[in-house]
Image (cartoon, rainbow, N blue to C red; front, side, top):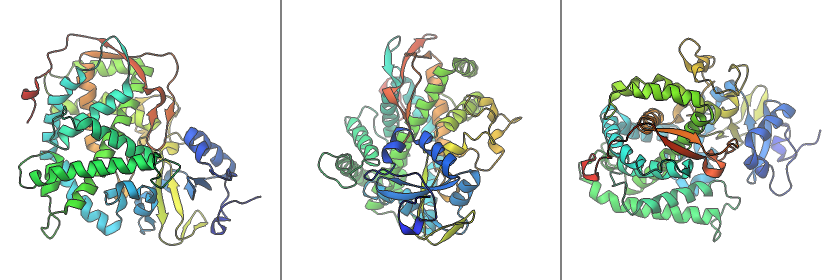
Length: 456
């Protein structure tokens, strides 16, 4: 059998690469199709070449647990995401082990109960007004609309900014450019390339964040950014300006793009399987009018199961990379020190040995009496796992419930096309064509609160 790639990986099989681009184009066009075909041909351990870099894919729920729990500290998260260093250097993604734990502990304070109450109040105040701007009875693309909405909402929740602040569109473009740069074929900021635009976007974000730091250091704001400006480490020292900027750049990008992807996945599911939308509408209609509190959010189990099922079919991060810091053995195969490794939650979440009829949309598989997600600790892991598990996992669920309730109180979503949705899966899934939908009125919408009535 012919072998490709570096000599140290000669013992690991893999599909034949294109001489120039490796497997990059095939993965970009159909990452799951390519991955499943390679797994069928070469087994649960094989190598691929992506954007000029050889990496080894490890398949299965056990592999997810081995790599993500990482009991022996064999895998570097920072080195796994090395191609993103120019864009997100200094964020939690780019830190490992003890340093990562120290920084994560400080950031966790922004997701505790008191802070979450403030975020929920802000979202309850802003969502009706932002959703009222969406057209009714007219076709529009859901994905770009929800990307704009989540950024404007994030400007309020995370930054304490007015969602209508004129800087928000520029922030949105900067984030879009940063994300696009993560999968650009040219990895240096050559003019007019994706990486060039991404670096320019990062510079704009850094400039904007720095302008806000001085005024927030001694202020009393309860938004996430203000809390980071006042946060202290275990020795009582505040983070430097650079640390605040680096952490916030990554966090706001992650919260913005993965949430928009998740909401698009939810909208796709509810327009593709409208019976489930009707079940959620019934659940929403049973909630009390007005702002939603913890009791109301806890009374939305159907919505929660539907969102979990949507993320099972289209997880926000299909592949998770790491890099070995020493020689590591897995299933009798040695992964030499410095090997780039990827695991794939998305493939595990479609395995028929873990899920009944895995290609179907069946939120009740998450009900207590079935609990298919508990067949393995990593059967369902769209938020990752281990020390680097998504810090905003609970926040994401709360935001999706609030968005769904406020939208479906007065509207019903319908697909505006007979063509099935297709997805660009990497780096973060998004529906090609923008997911065209039509919002139909269900009942009269109460007047959206004036801006001055929103939570300050």
